[in-house]
Image (cartoon, rainbow, N blue to C red; front, side, top):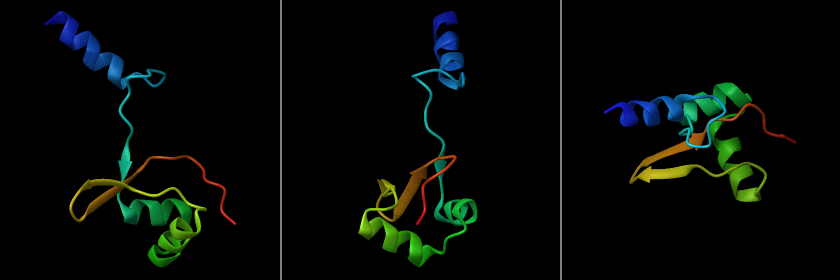
Length: 71
C-alpha cells in the first residue's frame, strides 16, 4: 500500500518523468494561443502546430504547453 502511494505521489511531482501530461480541450487551446479553431487546424495541416492526441472517436486533446512558436 505504501509503495502504491509513493508511485502516485511521484506521478504528481513537477519534475517527475512519470508525470502524466495535462490534456487540453480545443477551447482551452484557443484561449491559450489566441487562435481560432479553423486557424489551429490549418496550422496543424501546414505542420506548424502540434496535432492533437486522439483519445477516442470524436475526442481529441492537446498536451498542455506553455508556449508554441506561432507565425
